[in-house]
Length: 206
Image (cartoon, rainbow, N blue to C red; front, side, top):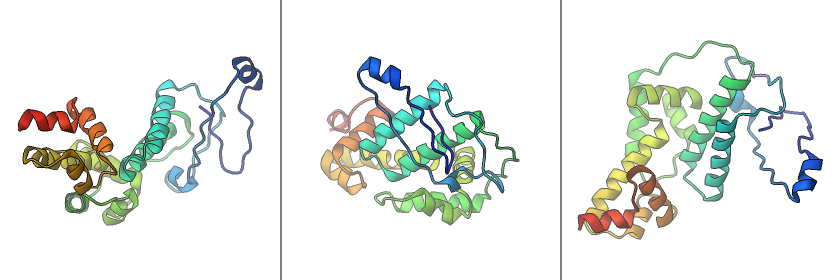
């Protein structure tokens, strides 16, 4: 995994190895520098390449989710989580952690998630309601409710989906009404949480 700071140009591809293998796949992700801010400053990375397999796998998974058109809140939350890990493990980023949010701010975020299940909510929207940074929101929400906001919203959607499917609604109707881009996206989330597709669940409860 290679990290290139703003305004730097680095050639990180091993040309000899790429030629020997016959091919090379390089995936790039450009991050807004403001997302990397810690306290009043920005972190510094003292190396270019980091042999961090778990973080590499997380970034590769994010690339796949981007290609599959996953929900924007899920994508943003995954990105913030990965950046938090990157900073904690590899950056020179001193600074005390921010205190958790007040319960009222967290309730407002939760109410927004409940009231807009079928909307393409952005992490920026939730952070604006809470009056804090996106990273601070994710950490505080997880401490209060056990899961980050995007996973909380997924669980709400799936609970509603189970009720709709049990009532006889089709998988396609359920996916559309809950804001999924198609039924395959609903099925992916269903399998991830329950180990079966939405259609499979519908057949067991009807």
